[in-house]
Length: 203
Ligand SMILES: [Mg+2]
View (tube, rainbow, N blue to C red):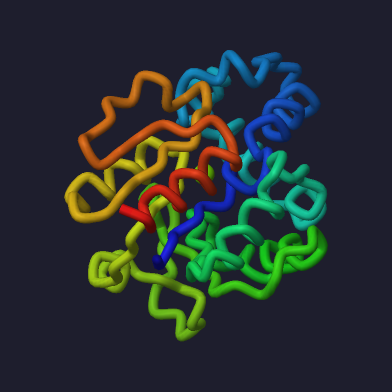
């Protein structure tokens, strides 16, 4: 199977880190379990300016490099590859973070994987960049995946019409109210991702 794997909060513990960053920058304390909305501006009650400041902070090379790995992610990806699946990383991070993101994957022992930046949230535009790691919305719509793994409601919205694919919703506080379609199911960790991929293959 061709499997789309999101990066933030699927491979990396990004929101926990942003919660720490918001505390350090603005003295705003919103623990991970209380991050009710994927829109962190809303969750942290930030002004536009504070939000931009936070996101610039989050995209600092150092902040991205230092993100902890989601438990079981590396082993899970290795398992999927071992089972013969094709794993493609599709992140919503801006293209400017591609090098540091791929560096993080290498640093954490992931093998070289196809890697793309897709504007999932309508926050940035790759413009007319010729960087092959830029996946436009148009190109994405035309790319078939058998299985998707993502956590963000906005990304899940983009997958609504993929009724012939399976979609695994990686459980996070901000997606607990998301209305799952018949193609979607919630998974609580990488063990369940691997098991779901296995089950889908043997059907
Ligand atoms: Mg994510």
